[in-house]
Image (cartoon, rainbow, N blue to C red; front, side, top):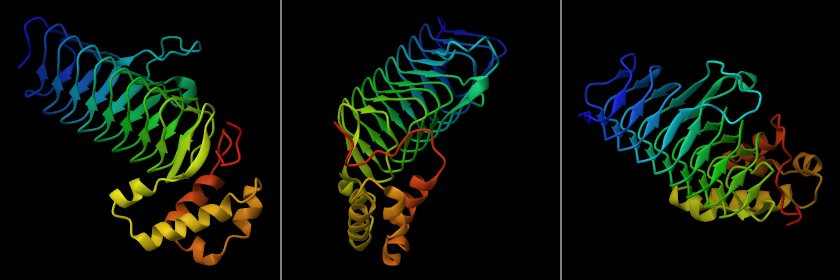
Length: 261
């Protein structure tokens, strides 16, 4: 059902069972898959492709131009997966040519009121972004991450899977998988044990990860700590995820327990 006051460009590709509420606007380069609900006063523009069963709440702005001074009207895109809940006043921008041209949002994410996802970000699956949190350009957010209210995540930051970011944290350094990060300028504050248990991770694996965490971050020389890590830790799949994350090419330093608050 499409409300009579909605403005939909004739070139837009919209599945027959999409619902569009009053005064919503959909641009010419938009593709929307089945069972999507677009409530009132939603704007979807740009080269934007949206998967199945998403719901967009009033005043959300999806696919608008990137907030980057280098942007000069190039044709860049936004891809959103399926099953996402996009709450009121959320903004998600398309990519930039310099950043690869695509912003991606995965599946089953809850993006709460007033949150922002900037150009060229890669956002995974089953993520929660709480109210007024903002992700700057080129950031990578892995699956099952929880981002607290009013967090600011700098450009090019990576946040590993199942990490948790405390409310009002300024994230300027990469956060390892399964880590908890807080602070005015973020520091590492342990392992997300609650999240691991909720994901049905076995206790023996959580214990190994917790012990390995102490060894990996026992001094500020992460390379030496990793080189000296016991094989019994390295063989654990959770620890392996952390090691791969630390060793991967990066533009931001790794957040550690020893960072200044």
